Length: 119
Image (cartoon, rainbow, N blue to C red):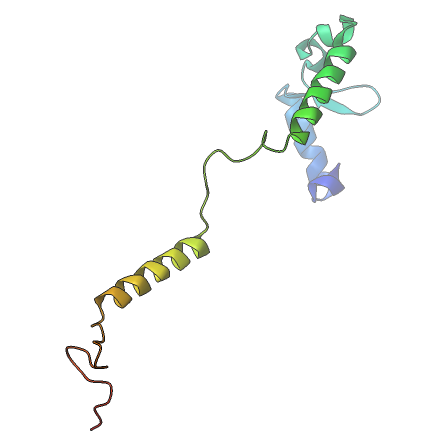
């Protein structure tokens, strides 16, 4: 247990002893730990109900078949990543800039500057 908790053995033993003293865990004669009153907290139907296995199998089958439909677990809302949002903003900005530029007339000159003009 100390290895799983990544601590020295002495520290793990003292923590287990403290948890036993607080009656949060129970120690059986073999030295294994389990939560206090674990057996009393378990549903009796898990042990006494003979249909549990069949119901569980039916549930797993339904879940597996629903997953094969493909759309069953699909996202309801469309999620947009930050990169996609930035790309959309860039496109909107470029479209706005393109729309605000002066148009070139048939003579090849815009209303502000003629393309053929050279300084």
